[in-house]
Every structure is written in C-alpha cells, then in structure tokens.
Image (cartoon, rainbow over all chains, first blue to last red; front, side):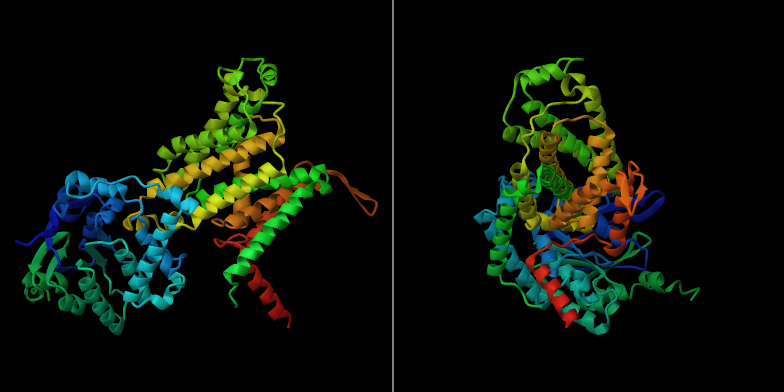
Length: 279
Length: 352
C-alpha cells in the first residue's frame, strides 16, 4: 500500500459569499510529483494557502503523514515538514542570499512546539527538550557558535546545489528574476521539508530558464527525497514533470489523472478553451 | 574597495573604546554642565537602542516606549529613596508597605526597574501584538498613556501629581556609559544571531517568515520584552540623573516617546549605531538650540528670545535631515571601520 504523505479531505474555503474552493479532495503519495492546474482564479493558490495554514478551511480536513493539521499555524505546519514558495516572489529583499537561506534554518533552533505537536499525535517522535537557545545566541556560547557554523555550511551547500554560490553575499533584491526563484526554493529547502509546494515556479521565465528550473526541480527531488506539489501554467513544464495532475475550475475538481488522461479530458479542454458549441 | 582585515578591525575597535574611556575619565574638564550632558547622551542612547530593536529591527511600530521608561524610573526611584525622604514626600497618602520600609543600592534597583518594565512589556505585548501596523501603534500609545495616568493617580505608590523628589543623583558618566555598553553588546549580539535574522525577516515580510517556520508572535514578543527591559534600565538611570520625577505628559509621557522616535529615525531605523548617533545629535542639538530661547544680541540688535523656539528649529533641522537622508543617517546598516574607510577613500578619489 502506498503511504499518503498528504491527504486533503473535502475542504471548502469561503471568502464571504465567494466559494474559492468547493469540497476539494486530493492525495499525494510519498515521492510523487503532482501538478495542480486550472484557469486563472480557479482557486489553486487558495488550496496552497489552506495546506500551509495561511487560510483556515471552513470545512474539511487536511492530513499530513496521517496527522490532522487543519487549522494549525503556518509556522507549525512548516516545522513539521511542509515548505512552500510564493507565486509573487517573497524573498527578504534587504538581506543577503545567504541570510535568506539561513532564515529558513532558524526554526530548527526553536522547534520545541512542533516537536511537542508531533510527539502528542505520534509518540514515536522524540519528546522535545527545552534548550536555552536565546541566551546562547546572545552570549555566543560555544554550542551556539557551533550550530551557527553548521547552519552556514549547510546553507552554502544548498546554494551550491542550486548553482547560486556566487551570489551568496548579494542582496536578494539585486538578483535577476530567475535566480530569485531559485533562492526562494533554496530557502524553502533549508527548512528541511518532506513536502515541497511550488506556486508557479516557472512564471515569468524564458524557455531557457524554465528548462533549467525543470532540471533543478528533478535534481533536488531525488537528492532530498522530496514529494513535490506544484501549480504551473506552463503546460510543457507540467506535462514533462508531473506524474499525476489535478485540474481545478471555479474551486471544483474537474479532472484528475496522468498527464495524458487530463490532456484528453473533455471537461479540461472546455475549462481552458470554452464550450465546443460556442467555439 | 579594499576590505579591512579582522585584526585591524579589532585593534581599531579596542583603540576606540580606550579613547572613549579617556574621554569619559577626563569629562570633568568640560565642566559640570557638559559632563551632565555627556551622561544624558548615554541615557538617550540606551532609550534609542532599546527602541530601535522593536521599531527598526523587528519592524513593529510601537509608541509605548515612554511607558516602560516611566515604569523603570519610578520603580528604581522608589527603591533607592531614603526612608526619611519617602516619609517627607508622601504627605497626601503614606507609601504602601513594603516600599516604605526598604532602601536598596543603585545597581539592584536599576535591574529591578528593568525587570518590572520587561514584565509590563509582556503584559502589554501579549494582547497588542495580535494587532498589526497602525493599530498596534495606537494600542501601545494607549497603554503607555494608561501607565502614565495610573502613575498620576496611585498616590499610595507613586505620590501622584506631587511626584518624587530628592532622588539620589547616583547616575554618573560611568553608570550611564557602562549600561550603554551592556545594552549595545546584548542587542548587537542579538541582531547578529539567528534570532536577529529571524527578526529582520519578520520586519520585511511576516507572512513569508511564518511560512519559513518562524513563530512571528513569539519572536516579536521576545524583542518587545527585551526592549522593555532596557527601556526600564534607561528610565532608572534617567530618574537618578534628573533626581525628580513627575507624571506630566511632557516629562515621562508621549513627548518622550516622540523624542526617542526622532532619535532613531534620524539615525536610521534598524541601526544600533544609527540610534546612538541620533541620540547624540538630539541631546547636543537640543542643548545648543537653547540659546534661541534667550535674548541674542547681534551687531547691537537684540532679538528677543521666544520660549519654545528651540523645538521649532529642531523640527526644521529634523525635516532637513529627512530630505537629505531618506532612511536616516545610517539606514539599516551599522557604522563600522569599513564604512569609514570607504568614505575617506571616496573623498580622496574625488579630491584627486
């Protein structure tokens, strides 16, 4: 039996009278690469925001590794293993590329709450112990300095893997667009996720850049044994990469299957191109 | 530009500290008045550095700093006042037990003042940090005002509008500058740690910080409480510098918050050295500008002094600084030897 890493069970997200996501369900198995597509305004990003805890669904449940995470805070959801990037890049633009990645590692120092949560739901996870990190950070104790050094080395390694090492000391806002996307992915990877959620990673990239990104995504997926869920409008990108695809339209799931199945689904063609009668 | 090696950096810093030490040990040469101003500079600097941790580094706009300064000032003053002085001052309502029977040293009183202020920062931060932006600013402003009004009306604890008099003038150059060194070391060390990175990330984009696993509320709270502690310390030093305390809005009320705000905005929000530069600027300029409040005679003409004129000129100066340095003198950066070196190099190149 395949182990579901993420299972979404009939979630509904409403904004006032507008139903952005309407009883949507999906599952992701460990090690899969899943695409979520749909026309503009279909509710794809809302699904992502519901998974990562930015929005709380009005009904339905979200399970991560079998643990109910519905309505938990974004930081807790990140700490237990879901990382994401944003559609419109949200780097910390006044900080260097290196610092951006190191921010991703910070929660590792203070993850007592996440460990407590995991331990409560599944006793096989280790019990958290209180560590005086703040005092250590201010007094610069040897154990803190050692941790800081490890963080730096790990961050640099990540940048190297993303081919960004030469930009390490640059301000994040000084980088070209395509590289900023990669920094965002590196920052998300720094939080040690098991599920990575990419919101339109190839948006605004030229074909060459998006080709390069495709290779990077494949590479990091293997290297970090990740499961990836992504939104993308670049159909070539999605069809080349994804094993299964979910199609959303007006907040509803209209199709689901392999790229080939989805491509030939009448409903999908209708959603993207319009009804045949009117065409 | 050439990079200054770490060794030279260290030597320069030590030389700089020794220079400050000699300056402070010979400060009495400047006369009583100016050595008091030098002490005030350090007190203002502590206020500014603690304030910039919240408003600059963490990026939450608090207007409650004067409340914490007032709490630190009153707590420490009540602890160091002599028993006779307490009996003499509290003639409307006697001071409550146990404050009426204890008198402790300056250092423990200062630290207790800081801790009480930090505790109040926690109490105020807990509900208000759920708000963001302007709403948070208004909430903290209101809380600071509540503290001031409480001080004004709790005759049994604070002597109300009569204020506290005859506080021992313990604060000298060494206490003030020593505490400034401690403040800068601790807040500077915090800024350049993993927590500092998290705080800066929060100031830039709280949502992205959350998604990166940072507990935004707890980190903001941490910054707020640490800032409250040092605000309390600065209040304690201020109380023993000025020797009388009263709860007027212009002494320990809203005006003080805005003075400190001016200091950190001039220095650059988020910069510790900038905050100190801002405090130095504010302390000296506001003293120099006092000459405009008395009569000035130029070539036989006498310009009559107008009370309040110094504040007017200060405001104009403030606007000028904001026009030429949009992000304050330092922006978010720190002043270091590399910067000074680069600056002189630039001047040199331009002169050639």
